[in-house]
Image (cartoon, rainbow, N blue to C red; front, top):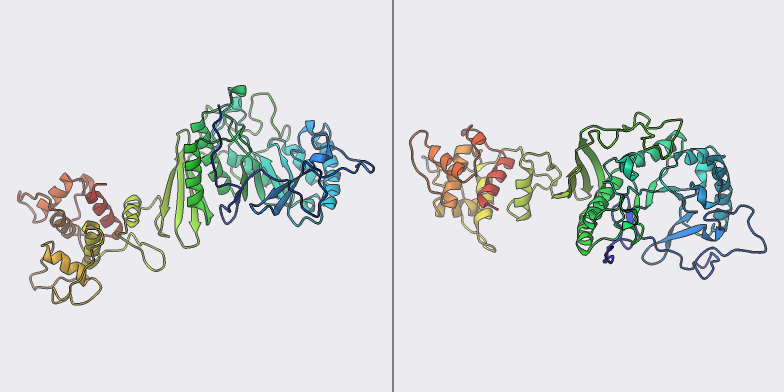
Length: 500
C-alpha cells in the first residue's frame, strides 16, 4: 500500500542551474486563454476543429506547467501523441501527420502564452513516430522542448530486465531520443515529464517496495540530470509516493545539488550503447512483446555496468559526488569544498572529514593541494586545531629564535609549551622545513600521549611502532621515514588519530 506523499520540495524550487524538479499541477485560468471550468481549452462547438484526437478530445490538448507563483513556464500539447489509443491514427505516419496539424492549430490558439512549447510528452518507446514527425516540413521549429515518460517499472534505472519492461537503461533512453534529434538536425532540450516506480500490487511483477522506489527514484534523478535532461517531473501518488524516510533522502539529495551544474560522468564496466555507434535497428524501432531486446542490447543475465560516479560542480568551486554500485541499494553523496579533491583523490575521505570539522582549510583559489609538501609550521597548526578544546584561541610568540610573531607562532609556541616539539640542536625550530614521516610520528605520539617503548633500532622506531598499534600508520606505510610528507597524507594520519 502506498504511503501518503510527504512534503517534498519539488514543484516550488529551482533544483539545478540547468534544470528543475517540477510538479504536475497546472490549469489555473490565464487571462489570455479561454478555458472551461476544468481548466481545459474551451471548445467552440459552432466551429469544431477538423483534426481531433489527443485522448479523443481536443479539450485535453494543452497542459500548462506552472511555477509556485502560478505563472506558466511551459505548454505541453497533447500528452503521448505517439500512442495509438489517443485518437490520432493507427500508424506512425498517420499519427505524425495528424499531430503536426493538431500542433499548428493549438499553437495558434495559445500564441499569447509566452512559454516554450513542449512536444507532447512521448510514451517512451515509439521512436519510429518521432522520426516520422521530424520528416515533416519545418517540424523542428514547431516545438521548443522534447519530453518523454521514462517509466522503468520494477527495475533499477541502470539495469536491464526485458521481463519487466526495461529494454535499456535510463541513460540509453535519453540518448536514443538525442540521437534521433541530432540526426534530424533538430537539437532541443530534453525533459522527463513523468517517471515513477509503482508499489501497487495490481502489477505485482513490476511493483517494488517503497525502499526500492526511493532508491530507484534517487538514482534515476541523478542519471537524468547527468545525461543533460533539463527538467524532471514525477508523476503522481500512484507511481511515485515516497515514505517519510524516502522524502528525507530525496530532499537531502536535492538540497546538496541545489545551485550545482553537471560536470562529468564517470563509470567503470561495459558501456552498452556508446553515442558514436547507433543503438537502433531499422526493422523494429520500438518495443514489442517478443521478449527480445529490439536495440541489440544485452539481456539481464549479461554483465552490466558496475560502478557509477556523477560529479556536480558549484559556482564556488565546491563539488558534489554521487556514486553507487549497480545492483546494490543506496547511494553515497560526498561534498567537497575543494576544487581539487574528488573521490579518486588519495586520502579524500580524511581530507573532507577534517575539513568539515574546521581543522583544515584550503587556499584562496578553492583548492586544497593534497600533493603539496607540508612544512613543520603548517603541520603543527593542523595538529593543534585537531586536539584543542572547542573555542580555545592561541597567543604566543618568540619561543624559538626563528619563531617570533608570524602567523604560525601561537601554534608552535603552544606545541613547545606542551612538550610536543623541542627544536633542533642549534635551538631553532625551522618552521619552513618540510616535515618528514619520522618527525610527524614523533610529534603525533607526543600530542596524543601514546605509550612509547624503546626497543632499539632507529630513533623513530618507537614512534612508528606506537603509530602502528594505534592504526594511525598502516603496515604498508611503515617505510620512507625520511621523506617529506604531503598535505593529503598528514590529513589521513590525523583523521586516524582522532579515531572517529
